[in-house]
Length: 165
Picture 1 (tube, one colour):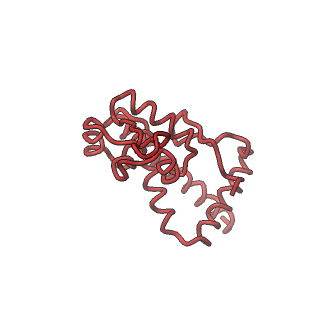
Picture 2 (cartoon, rainbow, N blue to C red):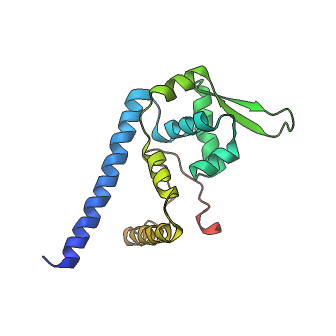
């Protein structure tokens, strides 16, 4: 087996590992909390940042604000978060946890998206650019560059800001 064959096998195995971890953690989150991975990630972030503005939460989650609003709507319907308008500016909405939300966060497992973001944020820019370039190449190989980016194992679509940077 040539070196190229070995490297291709390693790449494919690593992709399999990534999907495996994300799938297992998402199933565990759903089983233990009843929430999807993105919902659990959002509620964990709100727990850390509470009270937090929607735009700030979206920035921290690397998601479009409209995508986050959809997730928040579902969390609010379940009574896990509440929205409050600030007294200084009634247009500004802050998100806070409810007691039920805090109870879920206290027992919730890790979220793959959170681990991924935390790991990426500590990498130097050059390494991030290398990873980004390699992933863009995989997207091109698969012909997926026009697909809207769905949140991991969720029907939610992130309204991408990608090419605006």
